[in-house]
Amino acid sequence: MSKLSPEELERYDRQLRIPSFGEEAQLKLKSSTVLIAGVGGLGSIAAIYLAAAGVGKLRIVDESIVELSNLNRQILYSTEDIGQPKVLIASKKLMELNPLIEIEAIQERITEENVEELLRGVNLVVDGQDNFKTRFIINKACVRYSKPFIYGAVYGIEGRLMTIIPGKGPCLKCLIPGEPKEIEKIPVIGSAPGLVGALEALEAIKLLTGIGEPAVGRLLVIDGEALSFNSIEVKRDPKCPVCGRK
Image (cartoon, rainbow, N blue to C red):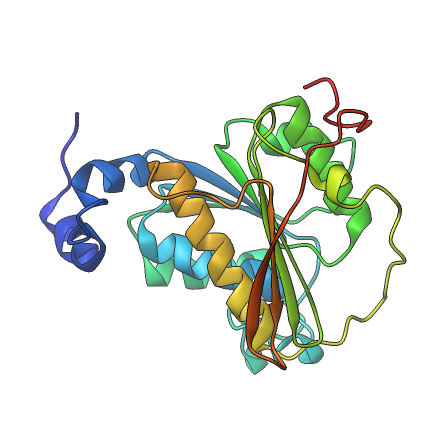
């Protein structure tokens, strides 16, 4: 097994001191590739923490440009970035944060036509989407190719999170069997996606290194107004059209 360089040992010193983590876990992160499906409110936070933690390669996918209304929550971007492609700005800033990792920036919308190629070679997918149509496309592909998918969502001051591991627990269609009404502009306080995005990054790190217990079959519900965290059991639907036969 390869060893960490002196720079890596210093950069990741604090997490290497965790007894259940150590150098072996850090090397697993270094050899991993994560797809961040959208670098908006959720994805920009998750990307920052995954880059800082030393995940070897981040594939960031987003078709949009930076807008002024993004800046209350999408902390990868600044006022001078308005009008620029998110993936290009995100790539630059993530490399400034950690030049030891690789960033692959793809300015595309995730569709049924390209999702297979986007999943190629990745260890897991982090949800940074703001609509369920695309989430369902990702969920279906992740089940088909046995890729873990960390689902996260926010509305107002509320958040949701569930880790989907095909064959080991329910998928997103088990949780949401219908077609939710899409909202063009979701109301949100910036710290809500900040919290959920950080938890998505934590779940990703746990899965990549094998430490801890992921939230499989559990929907974490965060009520920001009451500052409460509740875990709701979610059962796999044997008749689910996506994962029922997985």
